[in-house]
Length: 236
Image (tube, rainbow, N blue to C red; front, side, top):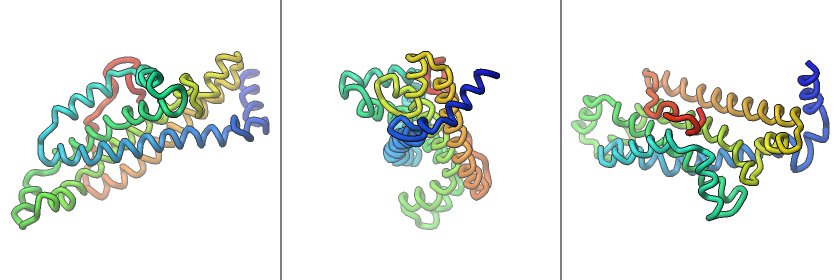
């Protein structure tokens, strides 16, 4: 009980809510890193996934990307970019983008491929162009699967962004790293708790959006990406 009292006291200390090391600033850093990585991942993965899913060409690419996404340890990706871009945000962002892409790409491809073939052919029979079939028929039906990919990606990136502090970056992981270094268990636990709350909040927000899209489409989404295949891969 004494330890939890120390954690509560840490949160109640006004010094931990102001300045560049305060909770609002660290949460903001974490959200900016995660949000930017996911947005760039969306800009890359969704167009590629739509093209692959619609044409059927390049499915081996999405399979390979999914395999790498499950197998490559997150920390290894962060370290990989340090020699190229140095410590901090510049090396963390490319790694987070690479972590964001696989779930979005794979679920986008799967969502397009799972659209009822008769519905697609009916659209073509009505004289729709291939672009119109993709935009007006396949994409609306695939939105729940795409939303699931976004949900998986966002939660993984939010969780992995904690490791950015290990390469001299910011975010909530700073509390965990500093807590270890200074042997301040209250700071360490507070950082872990904040990351957990942020990850759960992200999951709940995307879950709500996904359920709305599933209701509109009349079918649940199927997660084609799945969990990491090995320990040390992308966090779920």
